[in-house]
Length: 91
Image (tube, one colour):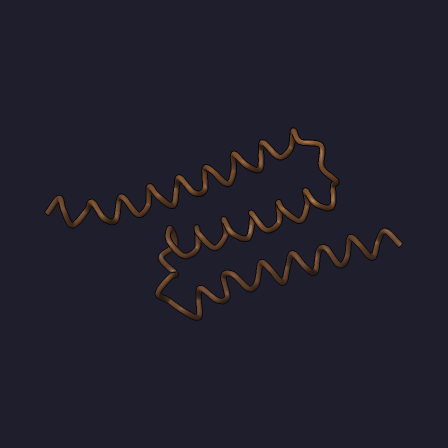
């Protein structure tokens, strides 16, 4: 019985480690002098990667195709809509 639990726990620990590493990279990037455009772009990409990992593994949507697609695509559309609004406000 213990062997049946171990692979699942190991998978979640690996995903947790990836999320932790991505977060630590994001925090480390805040102390590196980079352009705000580059920082924003990288932060958005890392955020989308974290959304993918959380939705796929912790929300168990990896095998539920339509819910997974909606969970990933709707935040992306929302982020691009916000970027469009904020960039249009600049001009």
